[in-house]
Length: 291
Image 1 (cartoon, rainbow, N blue to C red):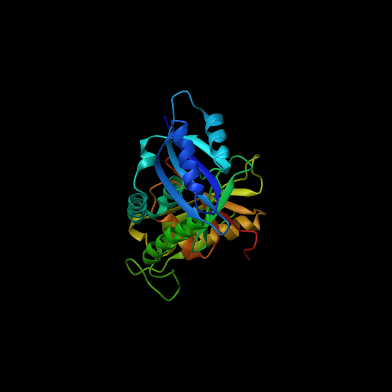
Image 2 (tube, rainbow, N blue to C red):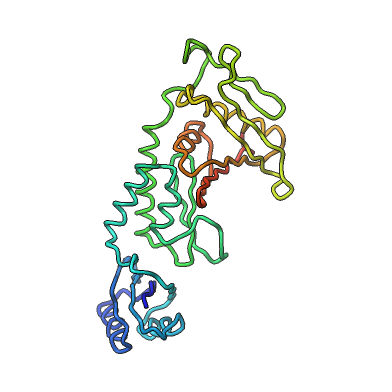
């Protein structure tokens, strides 16, 4: 049976050899190894092939007997034996093909989750422009993993930077068929009009009992008028509208493959927290500081 085990060993000669010797005596085979160096200690992640009768308790006892501490174990499949550089290259390709998949891809890359769970979970915060992505897991993230995560976030930022709208709508720039969009605010919505025809709309929904300080919002733009900054302007206006109603944040929910969401949030200059779960992408944007 395969197990992924993470432990911290003292940074001294022979520490890893002692661990390997104890594994050999117990009939446990080390089939994979990653080393994350630190200042006074080293974090090792091992993939172990243990006897079928073994469980977490036996593995923890083995690692602690070998000088390890902070032992975290979980069963795994043969996928854990994949070459690490190959995993990162494939992850980068996935993000380049679909930048909005970044939270889900980076979570899988670090065997983490985007959902809050156990209070003892360690959290890695990654910044893509002004969008904050959080992933979490029980095993503490090492300095090496933080550096890798930051590099992936920079990659996404570069890709999204090339996909931002070319300009924001203004009174002096004419678009489409020669019409300049007009933005009309109502009690619960903002409408974008071109020659009196609706080309986009942002809607602020009523608060729910579960989240009275949040407002769910919807943003829609006519396909013929997309990638012209209209969605960004609508997002900005509905955020201000929600703030005027006393909201602390707005929540935008869309399909996981919607490539326009992250560029739109970045172009609006607002800070957001993004989460992907299954086929759904959710962005929470704080609006309490908006004027």
